[in-house]
Image: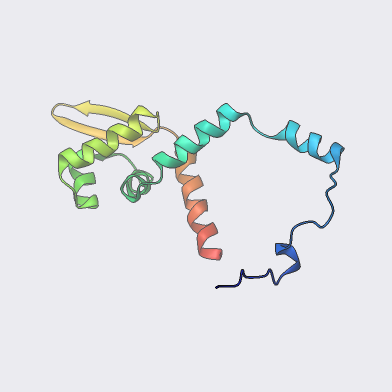
Length: 126
C-alpha cells in the first residue's frame, strides 16, 4: 500500500477555506480573451509545434529563400519541404512568389520572427 505524497510547500497546499474575491474574479474574467481567440491561439501554437516549421521560420527570418535552398537547410526532400511550407502559407504566415520555374518564400509577418526569437531567449533564461 503506497502513501499519497503530502505537499511540502505552502504554495502547493489548497486553500483551507472556500472564499473568493468576487470583484477580482469578475475583473479578471472580463479581461480574458474570448474562447474563440483562445482556440485560434491554441491552433496557432499547434502549427508552430513542429521543429521543422520552426526551422523554416528561423531560416526565412534571414530573408527570402527558394524551396530548393530550404530543403537543403532542413535536410528534407523538396516534396516534404513543400508540404511544410504549404501549412505555414495556408495560415497566412508566408508570402509566396514564383520566378520562372523557381518558387520563393518569405515571412508575411516579420514580427513573427522577432516573437520566436524572443521565445528562444525566454527558454534560455529559464
